[in-house]
Every structure is written in C-alpha cells, then in structure tokens.
Image (tube, rainbow, N blue to C red; front, side, top):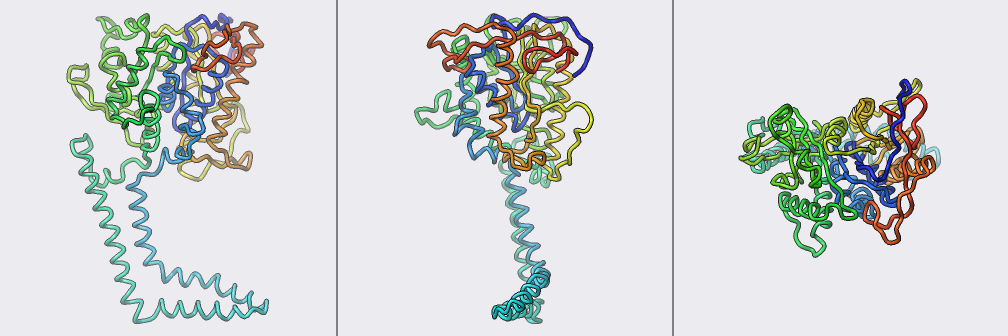
Length: 510
C-alpha cells in the first residue's frame, strides 16, 4: 500500500488495551492456529480477541485458553477429519452416484466398442513380441462384443437394466425428498420448491460444525466423558466459563461478527469486562440507539444462548453452504423472528469499528490472504470449481483488509500479519497443488506458515526494533495460558498504515 508519509504514532505498549483480530473464511482457521501458537509461546499480551468468518471459531477457542485445540496433533486443523469440513452435500453425492449408475447401463455397449481401441493395439504388440497371450486377448474381447450385441441380449436385457437403474435413481430422489420434508418441517424454507430443498447449497459445513462443538465441549466440561449437550446448553457452559474467568491468565474478552442475511446488517456478539461492557452495549435514546439494540448482543446476558449460533454462522460461506438459523426471543428487539445468518467476506472493517467502541487502543490483524501489488503477478487460474470460488473469497478478503487499514481510526498502532504468498484457498480443506512450487501444499504447512509469519513479521523484528520488553516472571502464564517463553515488545507504527515487521515503511505502505 502506497501513500504520502504520515505522522508517526505512539509505539506499541504492552500496557495498552490490545486486540487480536482473526479474519478470513474456510482454511483461514489453519493460519490462525499457527499465529495463535506463536503468540502463546512468545507471551504476547492480548486483552481481547475478535473474529469474523472462520476467525469466529478461532476466537472462540482462543478466548478460553483453548488455542491448543486448533494446532495439536489431534486438533481441528491437524486432524485427518479436516479434509471433510466442507464436503459436497450428501444428497448431491447420493443423487450423482445414482445418476451415474443409470447412465453407465446405457453406455455399456459403447464402452465395449471403445475398449477395442486399446485391446486390438495391445494384441498386435503382444503378437509382435511373440507372446501366445495375444490370441487369448483378442478372442476374449471378440466374445464380449458378440455377447453385448447379441440380438437376444441387447434388445431384451439392456432396456430392463436401464429401467431398473433409472428406478433406483428416482427412488433415491424420492427418499431424499422425504428426508428433506421430515427434517425441514417447521423451518423457514418449507415454501421453497422441493427440488431446491434437495439440491440447496453445494457444500455442507457439518464436518466443521461437529469438530468445533466437540472441541469446545472438551474444553468447557467434556473431560469426564459426559454426553455433549445441544448448542444452547453448550453456549451457556462456554459463556459461564469465560465470564467467571475474565481477567485470569489465558482468558480474554471476546467479540464476534456475523452477517444477518435477512436484515442485511452485521450482528456483533461480545463478552466484555465490566469496565467496557456498559458503554459498548449502551442503547439509550439518541443516534445509533436502535442500531445497538438490533445489532449488539451481550454474551454475558440472555444472548449467551446464541453463542454457538454465532460460531456456526461464522463457518458458513455465502451461497456455498447453508446459512445458520437464529431464533430470537419474543422479548428481544426482533420479537421472536428467525433470521438467516452467515459469514460476510471482508467484515474486518466492522470489527475495527467495534473495537474502538470496546476501548481498544492497539490492534493486530491476522489474515491468511496475501495482497499482490504491481504487474507480472498473473497466474493460470485453477480449473476446478473449488479453486474458482476460493479465488473470489480470498480476493474479497484481501481487498477489504486493504481498504479497512487505509481508513484512519484513532488506534495507537495497527499491525497486520499475513503471508506474502499462500496458494491454499478457503475451500482447499484437503490441501491443493501449487503450480509455482510444483507440489501439493497441505493445511499443516499453512499452519506452520502462520507460525513463522507471526515471528518474522511481528515478534522478532519488533523486539529488535523497539528494545522494549515484556516482564518475564518465572512460572507466570503467557497469552494462551502457558509459561511465557521470552520478552516481547512492539515497534512504532505510521498513521493510517499497517506494519509487517515492526517498523513502518517510508511511504506509509504495508
């Protein structure tokens, strides 16, 4: 980012109120996990953790000293189950396989003829090599063709087989329609055409939702082997744990942002300390009063029932997955309505505005999507549909972050941690092939990249640039609840720009 030089802001101070913002969707959670691990090891002081998109789930874990559940060997992003977080919906997979089976019956004669393009050249080569098996191959193929096109077989058996396979396909669709009608009873989408309810969004986030719920339950009360409760009870257990331990080592204030599709506005869920809570949720008469009532939700109050709704809405992707439904209480501002809620790519601007209201003085933003500048950056676009959708989502996030940090906000300083290059798209939960390095890049590597970037762009150079140090007390717990493993200090920052590596560049850019 380029621009005219601007006045230098105050240096980062560990005594100031600091927020960590985790932004990005899909696989961004793996990058967040690496950064969180580095911050915990370095003992970086964070007062509030905020999230948007997949950053909502990352922030929920980080706020209760649960970051290890993200990067451990059996954690969310190193587990083999991560490759199933955004799978094609089961209904589409089932219908697709049933249709493929029906078409294969019709195509069998044609496939038998097409096999001759391989069998006869193979037999010719075997004959040239003097092998006796050449005649056996040719005779077997000839017998197969004669049987497939026998006048007593082709007109009689093939139509029956096709009708049977087609009946199975239609029966599969009927079964799916019945399941949709039963499970969807009483929901908003009952009026949608049945074909749309069967097809719906192409991807399912059920795998990610299950992993998040299981991980949170292990943190808040599942160690004894008790059965995992429903979303409401799990949200209450989580918010009770966080509220009782706010201010203790490893526990941080929480701010989550999701998007209300029906009302076309962002919703903010927050758990703040008593010092900032009242002013943040103030709903008295005056400009913005109704907005705070309709968009702000205090997780320390009755809104604690919506904690899991917000977490699951954060992992949903616009159009690609189903939205999360939130049913508001009758006594609330929304009078018992049920709204569709999902993530919004590029919501980092709203997060930064809310952090000002929460009394935050300095911010560290973490994004897994790099910003490309200058010519000769074009690459061959990926041909798979996941790659095309990922390109759009990553571009929207990068552009939104660029615009958000360019707007002047009265923070002491604003830092951005992000990779210079990241081939893994938001939907590449199984990793992806990188043309530039001619190899497959995994989520584990993305997590390691976040760990390295946190040290290289924020921890190591800033310590050397500022010369300030955090107090290191033997046995004292660090950011994530572990023992602080070294002093950390942060360098100066230019007004209106971000710094990747401590010191701001001369042109005020990133």
